[in-house]
Image (cartoon, rainbow, N blue to C red; front, side):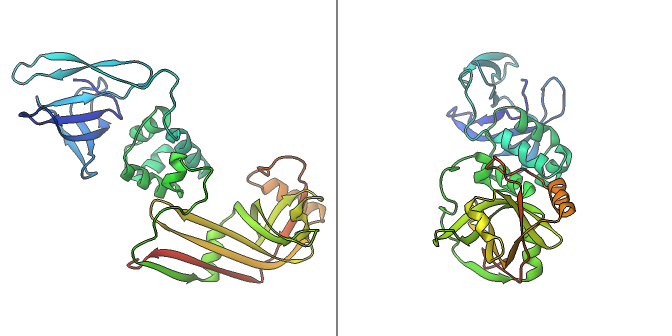
Length: 306
């Protein structure tokens, strides 16, 4: 019996031959893939050290071809080849989970060892998830999302064209106001937020922008002829939020204050030098607008017992 990280260990009933229990192999103790294995059981999400018996076999999850695997026959010590259907050549795992996990991990400046420690999993298993098509359990994705400060939906890549918050509400939600300091922490250093302005034609508009927080001011780049450039020299509202689809909870922060164009050359150079990203919208967006909040409020939805 030989396995790779991410393969499935299946324990069958000796009487019916049906799967009695299964789990994902998340740790190997021998380089050649022979037992024992660290297995995360699908029914409990617990990880245990397993020495497979004659009622166990490996279900390989290799990409690109059918694979044969040895399955021990009770009482013989021999093996027979069992063909397992695998993903067709060129298939991409739904959501491309590994790529999204790697991007989020690097975005937060975490090594694989650090991220695996936060997610309570083996670094080797995290490497497997990032490098090969995989189908981790929901519990694994929840821990990864929590460790990387994102959501299960974001890691799966599902619903990217749908508005957030389509899950069910909590049974007993708690809505509480956030302090100004909590709001500053949630704004963090940068991200994507929304600016509410009155457009040149007099109509209200809400525009998403990439923003930076520098010296307690919210700054973003735009073009002089854009809709959001109307924010300059006016009082505006800026909103940022986060929704956790898996746990049906989240938060929002609203900053209100005067906006102004940054014209001092050294200040412009400093903002450009410290920017974490160029505007996702692309194009020439060299006008920096700074918002200095006079009001900072927010709310968070959590389970009532938290």
